[in-house]
Image 1 (cartoon, rainbow, N blue to C red):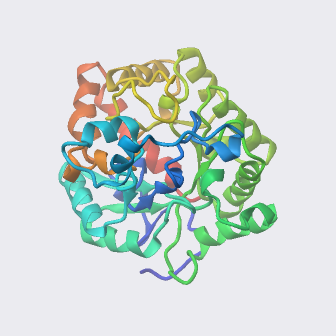
Image 2 (cartoon, rainbow, N blue to C red):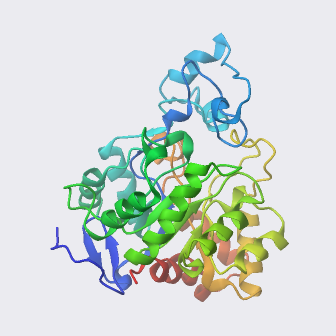
Length: 372
C-alpha cells in the first residue's frame, strides 16, 4: 500500500493506491465485487414493495412468501432455479457476493476481455469490504475503486438516524482521505448514496452530508435514485441546494428509472453524468418495480447515440451493476465482460464511432474518477 496522501488532484484513488487516469483502461463505474443485499428479504419472507422499501417503512401490509416458494428463497442458486431467481431476484444466496475467490476469477475474465478498472459501488449497509477488495484487486490484476457513504434507508445501521449530518460528512471524508477505519484502504468514490421514493429524511441527510464531503474530499459523488421518474431530478435539486457539484455527480440506474427521451435530456441538462448501468439485464420482469419499462441493450445504445447527438457525449457512463450471483459467469450469467464482449460490438453495428465508444468506456470514467 502506498503512503497515504490527502488529496492528489488528477489521480484516481483505488484500493491499492492512487494511479494516473491513463492507467485505468476500459472502466465500468458501477459494479459490485463484494456485497450482500440479502437484507431486502425480511424474516419470514416479507416481500419488498415496488419501490424496494420494506412494508414497515411504507406503511403497507406485509405479504409473505407462500409455503411453496419458501424453499426457493433459501436454496442455493442452481440451474433448475436460475430462471425463477433471475426474474424474482429474491433469493438469499443470489443476493450475496461474498466469495473472494469467485470475485477474483470473475475479474480475471474481465481483464482477459480487455477490462482495466471497476468501481465497487458497495456503500455502508451492503457489506463493504475494504481489505477484501484490496486482496481481490491484487489477485485479479484489475483496478478497483471503492465506494463510501450509505445505501438507502432499509440498509441503514442502527444509530444513523440520530447522527448529525456533520458527523456523516466527516466520516465519508475520512474514508476518502485517510482510509476506512485502520485498514489503510481509501475510498475513491462517494456512493452509491441510496435514495428511496419518496426520499426518507435520513436519506436526504446522508445525501446532503455526501455533497459536503464531495467538496471537502475532491471525490466524485454517485447517487442511487428512487424508483420513480421524478427521483433523479429531485436528487439533483438536493445536490444543488446542499452545495454539491452537479458536474462531479453520477446519476445511476437511469435505464430503470427514465424511459422517455425528453426525460433523459432534462436530466443531462442538470450537468450530471448520466449512467446507463444495467447493460446485460434484458428482462421485462423487474421485481422492485413491475411497471418499469426497462430497455434492452440496443435501446440503451440508441439512447447513448441520441444523447451524443444532443451534445452530452462527455457526460455518459456505461456499466452492468453486477450485484447478484445470476449475473456472474460462474453461475450462468454474462460476467463483468458483457459490455466488452457484446455491447461494444453492438455499439459498432449501430453506428457509434470508435471515438464515441472510447469516450463512454474510457475517457469519461477517467475524468469523473479523478480526485479534484
